[in-house]
Image (cartoon, rainbow, N blue to C red):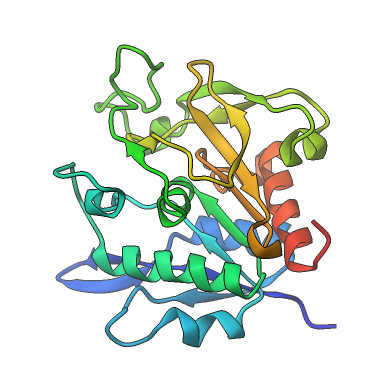
Length: 244
């Protein structure tokens, strides 16, 4: 039997002197390996295609992390720190809508977690690395790339949730690599995990019957050495097979 096909969104990234459609291998390899799926990259080129053309051709979507931030105007605010990626914003928001309409799974990691919340009417806060009421959610600026992912904190899993049931425990230790986070959670989303400061770190929903699960941390980083991270992608595989 053929495997389900996962759509993985790309970003507009500079590679040398040109703009490329890019997604880090770690997202695709983790999903294909531990969800046991085939994968197709979805270009963030809204001037050349629409979500309506793509959604019928895939069985689910993964919205990945990215160096870019969701445009503040999309959740009713001004300013904010870039980089921004308007093409990704447009494709991501419309893909969320179309996949829910088609009752197909929507999964998100980091930026994907944030943009799903915005697509469904929620807001973001932009001070998670330095705020009086939050723990630090990002490593210091002077660490190298690998050490950035070594910055970790616990998250408490909500009793009876999708994650607490999958992990059969009440807490996880996760990496934390984000400058932004949930401000107001969108209506219809159910909290799955919180950081010690109360910040929402994971949520789930079943809008229109579409399985939806997103996390603020990075389960795709070092997945081969982390059984808890593998579990997130096992859930993705179950969702694409109608078993979540």
